[in-house]
Length: 380
Image (cartoon, rainbow, N blue to C red; front, side, top):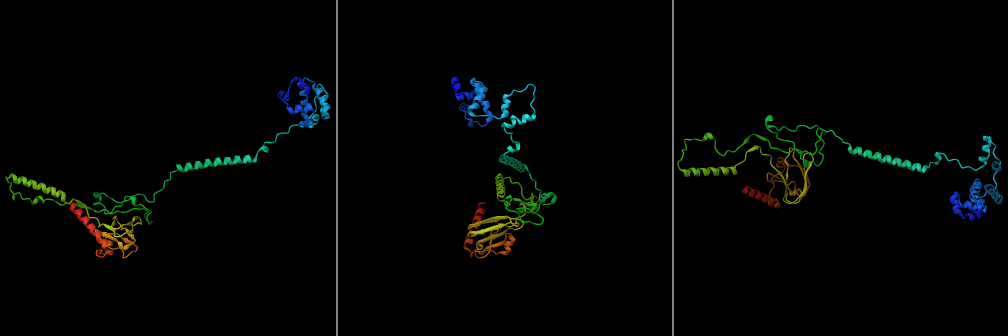
């Protein structure tokens, strides 16, 4: 066979490419090496195919190969190849099952589907599905929370705090509730009836039923036309006109404006003659002011229905001014005082007028304040 292949000028690779048989099997057939074959059932087919390719008799070549290599198949297989089948004879099922197929090694049956499943791959797939489902559910939950609108019911329905119509009520109310956002610092103290936060009731002066008007001239009924006669002197008439115009301009500038409200309560101020820390709280506990006042610095207490309270350190340097009159100090020495009512009546009752001779710094600040007030009055 090797000689025939050489005569045809074919290499092992050419035979492999044309017969689709491995070159190692071709070389094993030519050398008679049976150990190169994986299964003995393929040897006969390979030998006959290779002999047919070289133009040799397949049966003679196979018999020669078996004689040289000692290769032999089962007797049943030899009997089936040598004996010709009878015409019209059908092989029985038992003979067929116990014949060639029973003694020839066949391909193994494929494993069932469940045996080919990998537990690791199934676990990874399950984890991936759970992760995708968790991410989807989390995103859907976040989207619902973002789009949700919560409406909280009010603790107390809105109501009219005061009636400001002077026609129906006769006069405007003395006090009105005004809510200042700048003073809404923290939650107010809880009461049994209300739950307001940071509400400061500022003072409003009561309106007068009849405006107070300062008349510039006397009543018309007091004019007696018989007491004065028309003068024929034109110079006197012109001088009288000039005097009337001068009086009118003077009275318009210096005259008092029409007042329609009563005077408000006296103003209360806090004066520090030396650096002092103070804290002013409203009646509901809201912090209105907290700072370290420098020497000569003042803080005007906003008027309210309920007086504010003062807590101060370095009490010997803190005074109260009621309409410019100094009262105090809050306490002698450098102490911490608390719960000092800052209404004009409470300050006047609790403290006495400050003695300017006892505190040089207080005297200087009061003199400066009075001088500034006098200068402002002269300028006006």
